[in-house]
Length: 179
Image (cartoon, rainbow, N blue to C red):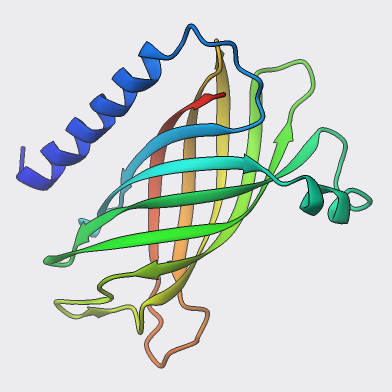
C-alpha cells in the first residue's frame, strides 16, 4: 500500500475510533462532526474532517420551497487532496440540504460549498485557480446512537472563474457523529 493511501486509511481509522468512543453521549441531531475519505480513478485521494451546523435562518428563508422532512444546515470541511503528483490543503463551507425518507434510517444530502485550495496546478492538471466550488449528492444511513455512515459523489471545479476549468470528480465514504 502506498504512503498516501496508508495515511488516508489511518486517518479514517482514527476518526472511527474517536466517533466510537463518543457513542455513549445522547445525540440531539443539531450538529455533527465526522471524517470523509475518497478518491477517483485518476489517482486523486482526499481526506477531510467535517462539521455540520444547524442553519435556522437559512431554513426559514427556504421553508416554503423545501419538501417536508428537509432541513437546511451549513457544512464546513477541511482536509487534503493528493493526486497528479502533488497535494493540496483545502477548506470548504456552504449550505447543505438534508432530506429524510419516511420510516427509514436513510436520507439524501445535497450541497455546494465554495472551496479554497492551497495548490491548484500539478503535473498537467491545472484547476485554474485557488477558488473552486464543490457540489455533492450523498446517501446516508443513520446506524443508531447518533452514528451516520454516508456515500457521496462530488464535483469540484471553478465554475469558469478561470481559463482552465477541468474539474475533479470524487466518490467518498464518511462517518459522522451527531451531538
